[in-house]
Image 1 (cartoon, rainbow, N blue to C red):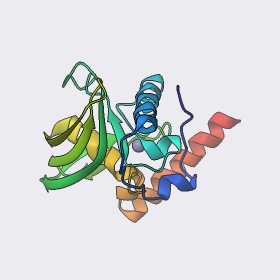
Image 2: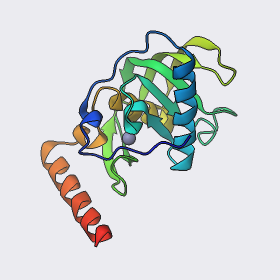
Image 3: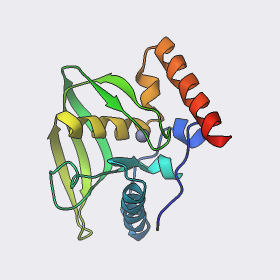
Length: 173
Ligand code: ZN
């Protein structure tokens, strides 16, 4: 099922998500919906709060990233190591149409529980750089109520959000 995307301004996007304690049928079903929604909206990644669920679950389009043949679902992902610094342009389905340069770590290690396409779970420690690291950092931020504009220096954030509001008004009229 394709779920509606929450847009910046909705409180759930600012709310830290809860850890998943038990990966039951409901969680598995939700993970499927999350992936379906990510594809329907052409995102490279999607986080549960973006579709109104306060749980620590993200999906990443590892097919697009040429890292696998199936999209990846990570439960309770945690950044356990980060090094370097790199600037990359980011966008977000919750701030549609806005793209902005964001500085983030270059290489990371993420620990998570991966929900495999066959429904099995495995503990993973993912080393990532490039676009993969970028997507993971962006999506994990969502689980803590942080949007990419929150990573910008205060003045730049104000400019970016003003630009986005102007664009929204223009497209609404
Ligand atoms: Zn996002």
